[in-house]
Image (cartoon, rainbow, N blue to C red; front, side):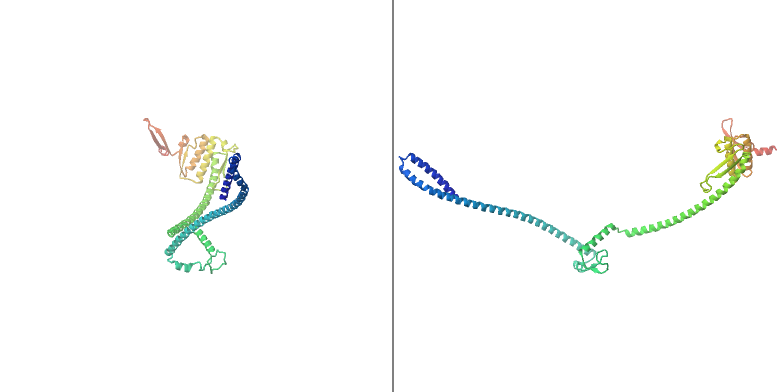
Amino acid sequence: MRAAQARVVSLQRQREQEREAAAEAARRAVIRRAQREAASAVAEEVPRVLDSIDRSVAEARLALAAAEAERSAHSEELTALRAQESSLRERLAGLTESVHGLELQIHEKKLHLSGLLERVASELALDEDILIAEYGPDQPVPHDPGAEEPDDDTAIPFDRRIQERRLKEAERKLAQLGRVNPLALEEFAALEQRHAFLTEQLSDLTKTRQDLLAIIAELDERMQVIFASAFEDTKQAFGEVFPLLFPGGSGSISLTDPENLLTTGIEVAVRPVGKKIERLSLLSGGERSLAAVALLVAIFKARPSPFYILDEVEAALDDANLGRLLTVFEQLRENSQLLVITHQKRTMEIADALYGVSMRQDGVSAVVGQRVGDRATASA
């Protein structure tokens, strides 16, 4: 095709030259007639040559189209081959990586197997052959009660799924147990001893508590009996003492809650002659003081004591009420000793002995004592 194209170009160039030559021959017909005749002969051959050239060009174009089609087919085939090569390379890379991973897994499995064999040898003193012969996957295993198989105690064929489930369950239970404590037995013995001691102490405390509750109940009962008896005696004594201090009057005491003697309160009701009193605050100062002394003396009479100390109990009393109170003092002194702190002269007159504080001329305080009863006996 290239040769034909070159030939076509050459012929075209030659034709142009010939045309130029013909033109030049025409111009120079006179001079170059011989050349014109030669050119005419050549011109006669040109159509045949051009027809031959045209046929060659058409054939060359057909060959070029076929070559182009063949080249396109080869290009498509080359593209498909390159894509196939890329896919094969990727697959080869994946296979290489997979093989590398498998090799690593095989190496890890070998290391794991070696570790297991060493562990079996150290813990169970068994070699690989005996271990596989006695505990291999072809050997039946004990039936797991938690498995889905029938409930019996016979051995069953090895099933990896079932055994893996048993392993996970055992690992879960082992994890729940926590870390192994080598001192667990000693600690358990100490805790058991401590538990026995605490149990004994708790039993003793429970028994002691029951005993204390029984004692408290007995004391409560005894206190109620004693309080009830003392209250009745005090109530009777108050009914006897109050008329002595309030001639013509009446007074009484009562319980606010007779059902609960340990928590009850005591109400005092007094009624001097000629007065209707609902509250003690309505009494005069002397009457309130005398009513309080009446209750106090009633308690003294209900439960006598070897001696009593009274501090200014008659300070707010007038002469008439003081005389009544001194009468009560005379009754009390028959069985008890009275120590009275007072500034009342009449109270001092009935005393057996007087004690006071006096300041001497030098400004120093001195305690002065005088037995009035001895002086009265001496004068007699």
